[in-house]
Image 1: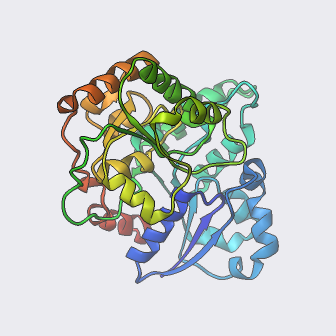
Image 2: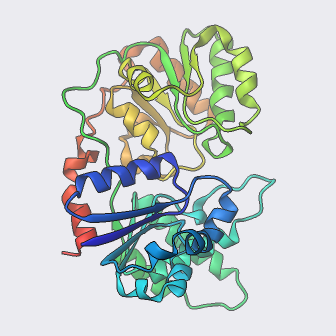
Amino acid sequence: MRVLLLSAYEAVSHRYWADQLTARLDDIEWVRLSLTPRHFAWRIRGNPLSWWLREHATLSQAFDVVLATSMVDLATLIGLFPHLGQARKIVYFHENQFAYPSSSAQRPPVEAMMVNLYSALAADEVAFNTAFNRDSFIDGAKAFLKKMPDKLPVAAPLEALRRRARVLPVPLEARPGEAASGSSINRIIWNHRWEYDKNPQDFFEVLFQLSQAGVSFELAVVGQRFRDAPAVFDEARERLGAHIHCWGPLEYQQYQALLDEGGIVVSTAWHEFQGLAIMEAAQRGARPLVPARLCFPELYPAAFCYDGTRDGLFERLKGWLEVPESRPPTLDLQTFEWPQWQARYRELIVGK
């Protein structure tokens, strides 16, 4: 079986998923095409043209399956290479643009939304990493199209798509042995992208409060950094200097060692569809503390969720830091590891 795997905006989590998938289903002949995760607006609209110009020979070949991430403009690509329409077409949603938060400086990403929608409609199979991702896509598409002038009867086909869609998380690599036991230390970990949608403002405002209240803690700010990071990162580095254990991206082995030392890994995100960074830290023994919104209530017991407000995060963090015994036990995330999902992924791709 030959499978064409297309990733139009290969962020770290997308590459991790693709690497693991191709390594574990190694009896399949994989052909991978990807584009770097830069210039988002152009990538999501221009990926068929980029590949048509650069990968014409590859895309002119025959494939049994085309597996595309949701940022691939699959409908246009099939128009450029009609024979690809004869393959079994699968779209995997790591995220969807209908649930993406817009800052006041951003216009709604209408073209990105439509690429997501057309790709889903052009596919034979659609899979989402969480039920939240699936439902926010369907509900968001219905709400968006309801505002458009043609009053299209979209409810029935979109509900049919919801019913037939699969929910398959991005699995974690299996971790031998038990999680690390260093989770009683008072270290707070930020391991997300340094961007607006991860809501660093709330995170650091709470840490400023904790510091002013005299609460003892260490701070590890890691994750993927970009050139234009929100200004609060510079402010936090100055104001929280006495608490900082490490600041900035780490090499992979250093990062894994940091997670093994435990602590509390926090999310304040406005935008999260699975949250691999939180999940990986929790797998290695850190206590996750996540807002009761987005995908999180689906993935974590209520003991690890706060109410989503700054006050709620402050109170929970203060309690966990001052009374470590109040923290819930470490999570067992074996149900999210690859051995539990490999057969389901094979079924998705092979179609049996």
